[in-house]
Amino acid sequence: MRRMERKTIQRQAIRDAIIEASRPLSPQEVLDGARGHVKNLGIATVYRTLKSLLAEGAVQAVDLPGEPPRYEPAGKHHHHHFRCRACNKVYEIDGCPKNLKRIAPRGFRVESHDLTLFGVCARCAT
Image 1 (cartoon, rainbow, N blue to C red):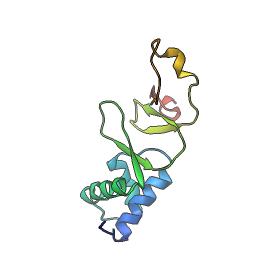
Image 2: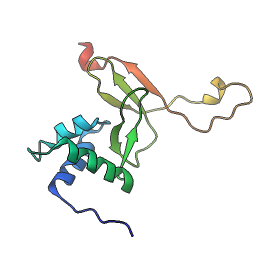
Image 3: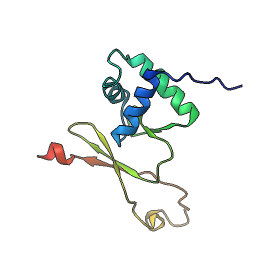
């Protein structure tokens, strides 16, 4: 039997922070966003809630090479990410390169892909 999660203001604030951000968030960014609704929220509560939201399929982890995961709502359309090297924020990129088969080695079959661009976001570039 699966344990039912209690609906608490802390849990709702964490969910809201992830949804409102419209970009993948680190646990610290989740905490910062959720504290707009619940001032005394702690990082341990954020980690526990993220673990629970992952288990129930409400959020998904965004894995970037050499970094801890970021979190975004589950069930989004296929998209990729851009990580700013100046502010370390991660942004969603709509669109996708087509015909990845052409860059795969001969005889290989592409089944899925993940693309992350790295650079400087518009805000940091000015």
